[in-house]
Image (cartoon, rainbow, N blue to C red; front, side, top):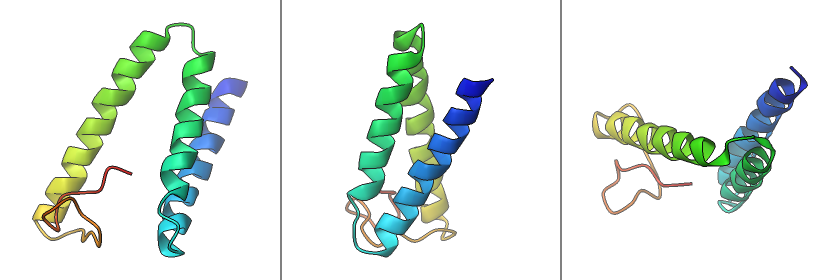
Length: 90
């Protein structure tokens, strides 16, 4: 139970680092926080290979959904990848 609480708190901290870093012209802050969170998570789970596969799948799925939201005009990215609707990876 305690590990789930730390996971939720870490996720919220990384999410705020992404949002506040982007808002204050520190775009590196969010990816750094996420990298630290994921490194700590992978180091503490018993089956780290399965965790990495899940993280990659969910991450790619999230980038796809966010890109589609950008494509239909729901989201706008200031620093997209080439086209303005493709979400940045960080």
